[in-house]
Amino acid sequence: MPTPGDADTLGCAAWFGGRVQTCHVCRNKLEFATKSFLDILKQKVPSTVVETKNTLASTGAVTLPAGDPSVPVFSCIRPSTTTQIVADCISPSSGKIYSGDLFTGGYMVFLSGPGATLAGAWSAIGQNGAWTDGNGNKHSIFVIYSPLPWPPTPGVDTFYVSTAPPVNLGDESYFGFPFVPDPQAAV
Image (cartoon, rainbow, N blue to C red; front, side):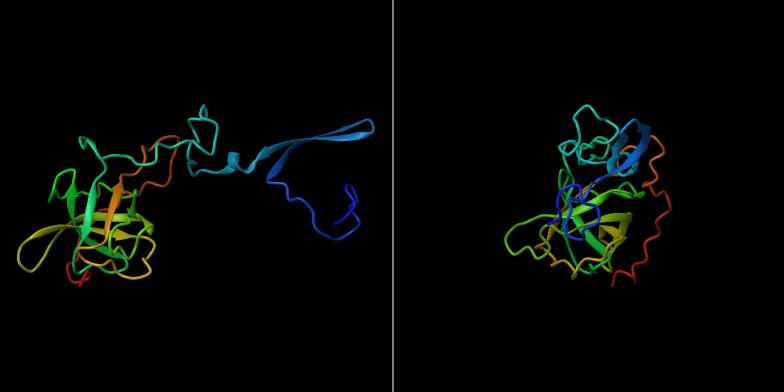
């Protein structure tokens, strides 16, 4: 280890996780005002990481769809792939179809349970809508940004979804493009 204050010796040194805001040259010293990296992030940070009074940086984690009493949970069915998840809602309203890109800009998180193969995996949702199978039955379909490591196991893997957080202060993470499901793409 270098001697503290020795700028000429190579070796290990503590890394400063911030940036210099202002600098004042004073008699016999230099004064630096520093800021954290957090002030340049546009992404919201959970309130447990940031002061509870910092409402601009905190988030409530899951954002519920309007009118729903709890987080929507889905069970995967065939023909899900690593980027297109076909599923049936199991709660709060069994069989409910969420269409119209309600979850666009939100995310899905796979739950643990007996036989679950994707527990803890998650992805941002690019689009969502309704999908009709060959028998005329309607299901929900989600197109995700980050491919899963493998397709979900039908009838075993479950996940919950969150809508996009409220758009405020120029939040650019919200996507508003229309969704036209292609049944052949999910096969």
